[in-house]
Amino acid sequence: MRLLLDSFWRAVAYCMLPRVIVLSLLPLGLMIVLAAALGYFYWDAAVVWTRGALDAWPLLSSFWSWLGRLFSGDVTSVLASLVVVFAATPVIVVVCLLIVAGFMAPALTKLVGERRFPGLEQKKGASFLGSVARSLAATVLAVIALVVSMPLWLIPPLVLILPPLIWGWLTYRVMSFDALAEHASPEERAALIRAHRVPLLCIGVLCGYLGAAPSIVWASGLLFAAAFFVLVPIAIWIYTLVFAFSALWFAHYCLDALAQLRARRAAAEASAAGGTPAIEADEASKAALSQWGSP
Image (cartoon, rainbow, N blue to C red; front, side, top):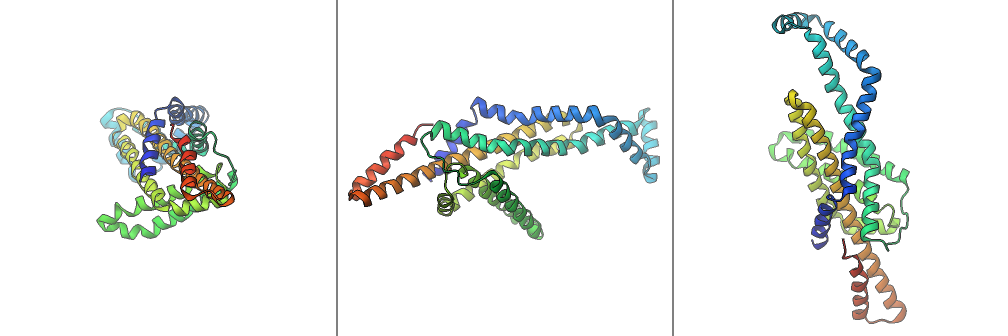
């Protein structure tokens, strides 16, 4: 519990750092650049195609005519522009978030390692391709679990329990692996994930619940079209900030647990090799861990 709470408040404090704030704002800048580029090259063609598709619906032609007489304007042209915006925005957002997430978690783990664990040896226990493959495999399993469990969502309490549990498991599997990829050996990583499975799963579930908050803002942006261009960027920023907080929480927890594991093993090896009494070995282990007390 101490490790869980300590890593939590440290993750909250790190979210206030300028580097983390800049990383959380990066998807917004990337989205603006990508939207401007796509709009410059494809806006007119997309609007023309969408308007043609709307006019081609015979069942709605009378409705468009009625709206045109009501508002004294070309309703289908305006509607086509709105449809293009609403259809393109989720795609642009997902692409931006995936790009940022691809290097945000390693950057935040590196930040924690440099500031809090500068002396922790990096054993390079996982490659980038291995991390990507593991993430994809865990995502596929999570999606399958979500699809299989959907009939159970009709039971009111389970709809609030099963999806967060599944996404929490996915978050725990992916982020704990990424947090230990650079510093831990494969054997250390397996031992830590096995020993701390329950706390790591709790972190994943709590982060899953936090990730549901931006969805409310996103839904409000779709519901209130007038505020769409204000609420959606806010939702994107919250998504990224929650992701940053999750990565920092896992990084602090996993690297602290790794430091403790190595300190205990070093003390045990020194005790076995030099005949050091158990009490002195325990004091040596505590002394080795004291260096990680600073933020």
